Length: 398
Ligand SMILES: Cc1cc2nc3c(=O)[nH]c(=O)nc-3n(C[C@H](O)[C@H](O)[C@H](O)COP(=O)(O)OP(=O)(O)OC[C@H]3O[C@@H](n4cnc5c(N)ncnc54)[C@H](O)[C@@H]3O)c2cc1C
Image (cartoon, rainbow, N blue to C red; front, side, top):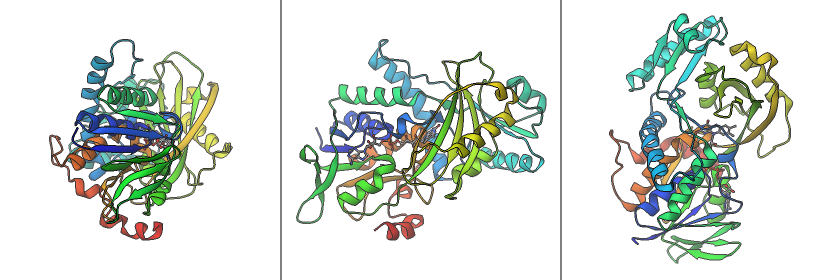
């Protein structure tokens, strides 16, 4: 083994990091206070999207992630065998539709900018749109198809990554809460204090999702990760009437917005089981998980505007979780310049499922001091804690 790593958090980001680092011959221990895949990675949808990202660093990470997903799913299936539950990976494509006159041109302009950054984005005529999605509202004013958008079952994907990591020698310890850091005389983080005693390691990875700010704090540094609540509605099973991920143009604005108030936009898709998932809301209300009717009502109304047949669908349940929100809209991946030995892999907001594999590769490259094996250059330093866009928020979180 070429070194030891403790990873805090067994959501999809911790799981992907555990697999990547154990594959690099590191001695990996994952510490999870609850059970594996029990927090945000179990309270979300499994969209792996490029369509909602404008040109820039997050899109580059998503494009790299998209190239990793198909390969990794094939490797996991081969490695874990036929008895492992299916990961439900499907490259079903995303269809973004504007339904207002004002919404049409911004959507087409956004798609043109994405195309210039290498995204496969096809402008559709009204006929083409309705051939692809016959039940979509007739009031479509513009539509763009993104064939690269895909999906995965996030809980099964997390468990598969952990199972693969275990096969590579990683140990996954549940019911263990990290409560503090162990430092050497020079201030380097050399271990963690936990509810089960101290554990030492060469590198500590903070992959605690929306709780990463709390974990950073108990380890001795500030990190401005905040929870951003999201809710999803689930209908009863029905014959498939939605064939892609279909969302309205508002969605792009909602993912990039820093607004703390309620925001909703419609994302509609059918699952393999035949239920329809209708997402989602975005709201900064701390870790308050009490039932709130207004977001659910807004999500439902917007979905019906896209797919009028949903007006008579039965909602079976709703669920929600807390996205790990970063104020500058970029995840933090890399070593903390303020505390050698501490690494972060967090702050993915509404894209952590999609970006998990790419995050793990960047982290592996950083810890093992290797290159990232992407087909285009990725500037790892742009995701570091000491980037300029994060500086004002770091001061606040200190
Ligand atoms: C409604 C909704 C819809 C979403 N849809 C999508 C989507 O379609 N596509 C997409 O890519 N993303 C989506 N997301 C975002 C995605 O779910 C997250 O970005 C992702 O799950 C974050 O994973 P994680 O591993 O960082 O965090 P988590 O899954 O939350 O894992 C962190 C873990 O750390 C553990 N932990 C915390 N503190 C400690 C401690 N002190 N000691 C030990 N363990 C600790 C927690 O128990 C938890 O299990 C959605 C989110 C929501 C809420």
